[in-house]
Image (cartoon, rainbow, N blue to C red; front, side, top):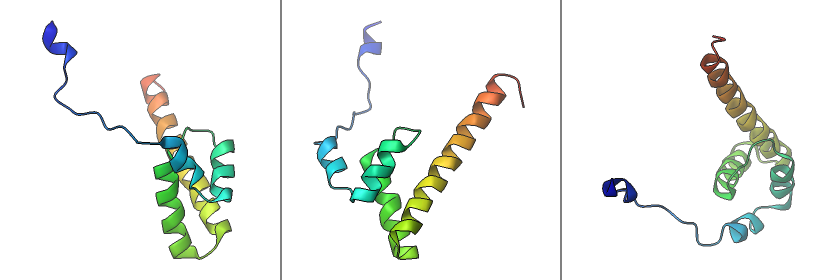
Length: 87
């Protein structure tokens, strides 16, 4: 049983997750505050930066965050319905 207490995988710790959150732009922080799912600051920053490069607008970046959350909710919802025998 002792072998189960030690995993070969290393855990990754973020140095300062709140500092990462504080570095997000104000509109992205506001979006995270109302988001349904718990998002990491790194994920939000990655989506935000890509969306700003591609759309050039904060509104476009906010729309991308909402789309990402919608896709995740749909994927997790489909998994829940399959697990419950619904599909």
